[in-house]
Amino acid sequence: MRTQDYKMLIGGEWLSAESGEYFQSINPYNQEEWARVPRADAADVNAAVKAAHEAFTIGPWSKMIPSERGALLRKLGDLIAQNVKELATLETRDNGKLYAEMSAQVGYIPQWYYYFGGLADKIEGMVHPTDKPDMFNYSRHEPYGVVAAITAWNSPLLLAAYKLAPALAAGNTVVLKPSEHASCSTLQFARLFEQAGFPAGVVNVITGYGSEMGDDLTGHPQVSKISFTGSEATGRHINEIAGGDFKSTTLELGGKSPNIVFADANLDNAANGVIAGILAASGQTCVAGSRLLLQDSIYDAFLERVMTIARDAKLGDPMLPDTNIGPVASKDQYDKINRCLEMAMAEGANCILGGPADKNPEAGQGLFIQPTIFTNVSNNMHIAQEEVFGPVLSVIRFKDEKEAIEIANDTRYGLAAGIWSQNMKRCLELPAKIKAGTVWVNTYRVVSYMTPFGGYKVSGTGKENGIEAIKQYLQMKSVWLSTAETSSNPFLIR
Image 1 (spheres, rainbow, N blue to C red):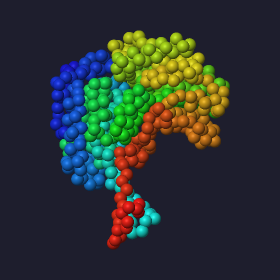
Image 2: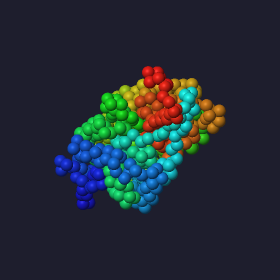
Image 3: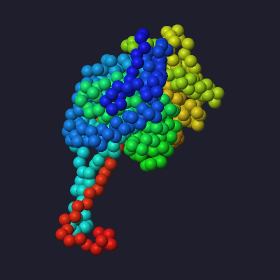
Image 4: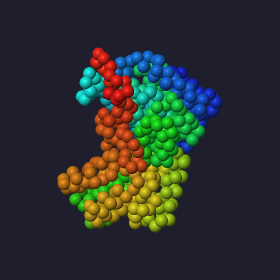
């Protein structure tokens, strides 16, 4: 395959990095280089932020009424819908996820731009009652300005939609930085902003290594808001930088989500939900149900159901419709997962399926991790406490509801959880006892543009999706207006 050179979008122009440097994009399925991506540095970051700042302050975007912004977002949604196949193929080539999943995901993404496009002109202020005579007080919502939006490699375009759609609907401008492990689909997607008619500089896309230019972006004095999806460690670092000059942040970080199966559950549905929670996307999702909490009385029988499905999972070319599990996205991630597996066995966990480094010849040269299941796991083990981000399931027994809640909450993460039961009282009451931002009951890994999503504890701050999301990109201003004909004593608080 011929190597394709991509360029960055800065101020309406398609540019190489000022240094002329590139980095490779490697297809995780066949380990072939297929694209080169600009390796931005501080100079490129500064150019992109400057373009976004000018678009916000003096460009046509600053003069657009909300309805006009909304119309552009809806047009963008239409263009995405017309380019699903191309964008989904690039995602699969970039990060190894199944084309079947990526095409469905990209096909759903327009809904974010339709929803927030419709919401753009429905943000209302308020007239407030006041105890001051001859005074009128109202509040209004205003955009922050330049937003630095940083996305992870597992679902670049979906995560971009989580950030771009509400940020733009609110009237901000954006510098979007995708992961260095999966940048190409975002660069191709950026062309649609031109086609939709967005003014130059409203959306800028820069690419490069976070370790080399991430601090330049998040610490830039003209960046007022940071929205980040990625690891806990990077989120902590960004939060420290943002705190230096009190930038607003929305952080969607890691998870170690429990999937809790009670004896009274529909066990067939629960088994399918457990598999979907950990093997879908090769486990490369922040909400992966990586801890299976199983009630004692069904432990052996249910585990056999899960193993039967997992054993039959086909590893292979992610572009083929009969492939169940594709490769992990990068060599770094592949090596990290294998280290986690080796550590789990060293700590005494029993590997009953899979294990380090798949040797299946059908998998070719790809970075494949076999579906892996550990039993004899205690919740204080590394494999039960740290995010693996691979198709790796840790199985933990529990006796009763009280113990299930204790185990589920015994982690520093709090992104998501699953509950499987046909006891209606439990289904209604237990979600309130789980410390997680999303709790699924008798289903798993369901998301919507209409529903807020975000974590508790170290899984992040702020919310994405739904009406709550646009509030993350607006700040409130209070306005006092005097109707008095004469002024009072200037030395007194009025």
